[in-house]
Image 1 (cartoon, one colour):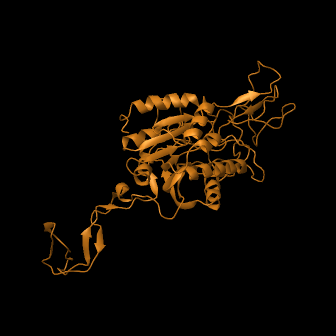
Image 2 (tube, rainbow, N blue to C red):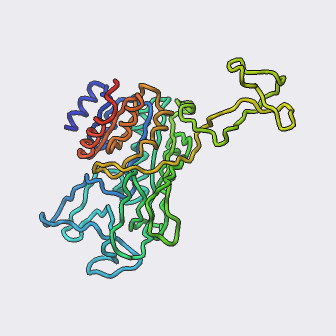
Image 3 (tube, one colour):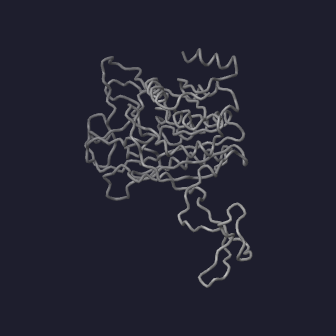
Length: 380
């Protein structure tokens, strides 16, 4: 099915919008035409945090083997025969080899790379294709979360998955060369700086603050309550509607300095409104026009939201709506190469934009289609 779709795209050099394409994003994007999307809003799978159910075990000596995949390295451990030190019960989402039957897990999903360096390299290559698809005036809004190396105390039990947001922080038991246990890997900035080095303009870092974050049972650091969103562009000049996402001024008496005029001067558009104000002594103030709004700040307070479907890593619609409103003109195309349950498409449709999605897991495509039916009808 995917091969037929790719051939069709390659032959016609065109693509249908308001549609989700199933396939491996690393190969599927190469078949899409250039300069077709206005805005990219996406959250790739975070490195070494989750299994989205797209992998398969190959090379098993025992076809009936259920494959051991939920063990992890820890500082407090027991020694098991023919194995390194392990801590039973701690859940690790990506183990590449089953110690029972020798099968190797093959997975097309991004995030299953063995090292941070491999993950960053994969992202850089992927974003070269995204840049090609993006119009010269386009913007990219990239959400990424981070990962800790080890850091556990061997207490047992399963790591809990935070629901309701697109990727949450989980302390894994990964082993990374040159990074001792408990290190924060710094994945978001590793990726951002690598993209910058590859030619992208790293325009801004935005902090997504979660007022009601997932509690963590750590006692030697603070609970993580934020993630990163990076604004990236191809060129110095790009489409950005700052007015549409302005926020209310904190101080209702926000003034813009201006030259004072005579004290009887009034605004022609509003005869009841003075062009200036008087201070407590009755003197003419150098403050004039009142501003009810201000430019949106770089810390966005957005609570996580729950989605009833099976996809457990969804964007809060309120988080990405400013990205779409500011970064994509009406009638433009919003692209999400990791479409998931379709939040980006839903918000795009709601705000009179087209959407385009790629998703590896057919189950999530089914969820997304069901979700999109519950939004506004197709406008294009």
